[in-house]
Length: 254
Image 1: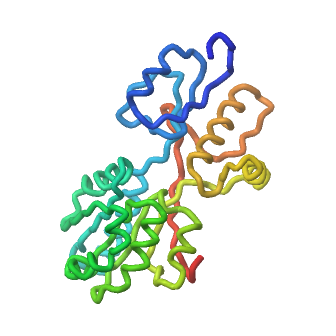
Image 2: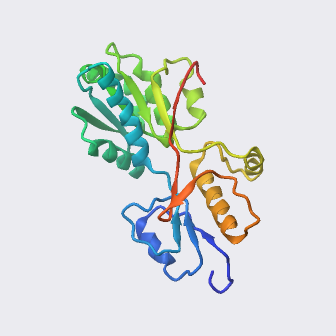
Image 3: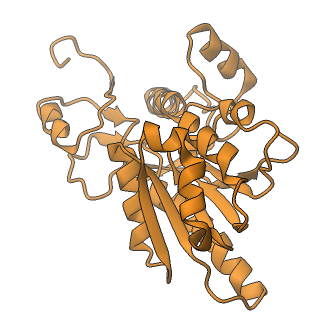
């Protein structure tokens, strides 16, 4: 990279230890898949990862807000975590916020397929609870389609960027989804870029890695030329992309 004199590098990495492989690269580097939290990196590295911790904090505030407005006692928080490193990470964030009543379970493919049996065994826990789905779209669809079998009604179902995907709508069609809230940090993008992305099989509307990668290109091109006008609204602070967080509800299947 140094010999060929590239102007910048986009490195899609997911392991903190792999950053050391970039030590000999002198040009600006952008990592769209990680944040700068707990990472010591050289000043030429910029991070564009989604801040899941901030998303979960915003989602948790909706629970606190409802309890405060209605003078309710704190309700239970249930964390259903995928059996992957990301699912475990999201579950740890939820747990670290110290909800007064907390229950968590790791959801394998087998458990997801037969989740209704699990619900029947945990009816009392579900009553008026707030559920975090830290599972990918297909598993989340399986869980949501079976949660209605409970006689005890839960309060809210909350999820981060992992479930901001239109495929979820087709998986839960016909089920009650009025209490589902999903956090999203992908902003509206110039339609021209969205269409170019589609031609390159790159989804800039729902795939946050593609969105973050395009954001990195936008940043570097802007730094290289005063004549380039940025397409993206995100700012950067301390070598980290700062994303807005918006909450979405599923209404009438959309």
